[in-house]
Image (cartoon, rainbow, N blue to C red; front, side, top):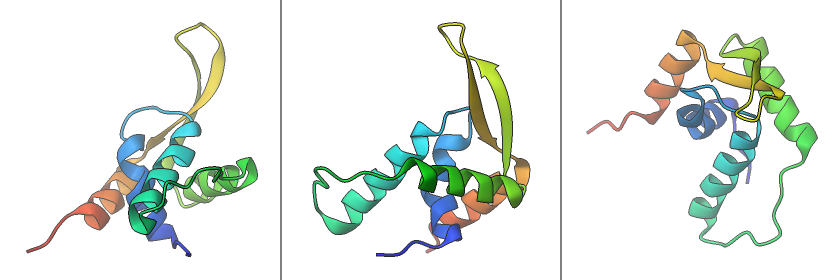
Length: 98
């Protein structure tokens, strides 16, 4: 199964309406694939490099904001959020037309 960039923004975009970490990418894609295949996907994993590639690509396309922010525990971590253009594309891809 292959997924194009518009499908990726459709899949992960809703989780990036608020500041979130890269772990949301793995979770959203796994849930999508599980729903599409009807499989439990036990043992399935997405490589960290693939997650980095997705985030870099969306940042390069000017769809994501990136900030180094404090976590609840007070540590610093990289967080991502859709920019207005990313939000607009995500909404367009997720809208259900009659």
